[in-house]
Length: 210
Image 1 (cartoon, rainbow, N blue to C red):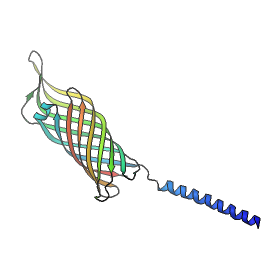
Image 2 (image 1 turned 180 degrees about the vertical axis):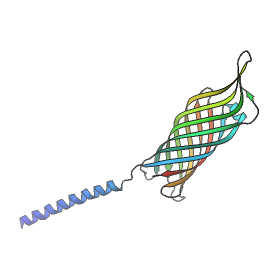
Image 3 (image 1 turned 90 degrees about the vertical axis):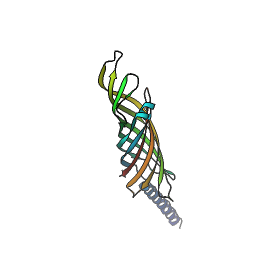
Image 4 (image 1 turned 90 degrees about the horizontal axis):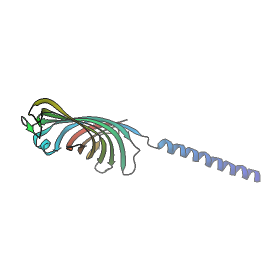
């Protein structure tokens, strides 16, 4: 009788151990892995700094692409870390403008390469996800015009500036299904150079998760 009791107790212990191992495996299997994202977007960008930039240029168009990693979601939302590259073109509004020793006479081209952190917040009732983003990277600023030296001699020359840049933005994303979402966003892009260059891109786009 005592041996039967011991065998029954041993069976219960072994069963408990097996089920606990199975549960731990199931929990591991059910954990959400990292997902990968590809984004594409387009729109315009408003010039803001310096003042002569805002007064003499207007937005033409802006577009970009990116890719990144989304971390497992929590109860409130999820975080995405991704890299983007975008191009912004500003049209000149008049024939020329003079700022010291440089006669501006053409379009401004701005290319940004950024590493961004985006935080999506769940709004299940409205089926949309507001988000914020922060990013750092580099801004390449190119403008065309005429260089005027102290003797008054003019030469055709592109003005080129490469600078550290940072960005902050807000947006709203609407999931279409588990893999596809659409979004609209606005952000500030600031190049830390003398004088500082700032634009406000406004974009609509799509992202694909896989």
